[in-house]
Image (cartoon, rainbow, N blue to C red; front, top):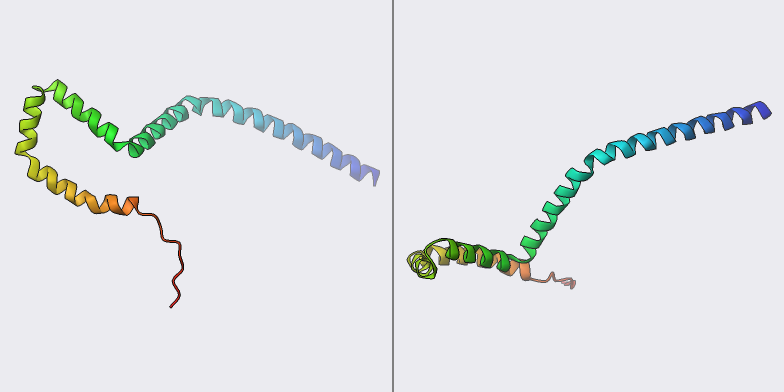
Length: 111
């Protein structure tokens, strides 16, 4: 019986040493992935911000286009010329915006 307990204790010590080696190896490998994963996390944060604040993004892009091109007059002229396309695009998005802003109905209807 005593020999059996000694074998179990030795086996446990060997397994603990193996676990410690594997933990060190995993830590070394994870250090290699730290910078790429941090960049991916930053990209996800940017995407979440853009999805949460589309007005700011659209306004910023519009402002950059107005400033970079020929000014506000050119932007107004271009918008006036292309308003049917812009209007139809907006009308196509309107049902999607309504669906996204609806709250789910959790009431149970019994018939």
